Amino acid sequence: MAEICDMLMDVNSRKLQWTFKVYVVYLWKVPNKFNENEINGMEMLLQDMKAKSNLQSQSH
Image (spheres, rainbow, N blue to C red):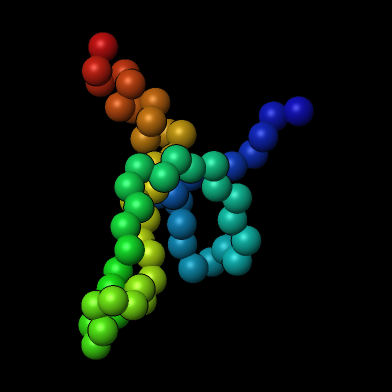
């Protein structure tokens, strides 16, 4: 059975449930602005399957 996944570029406010298959391209910690020794959160740069296939076709 084929796996059904949504693309990141299709995200909108009309749908409440999404299924993504992504690669984490880059991950970094965001320091607390009041205390740089504390981590306030983490941010990620994500890439879905469509972006990956577009990058592969452009490189050939």
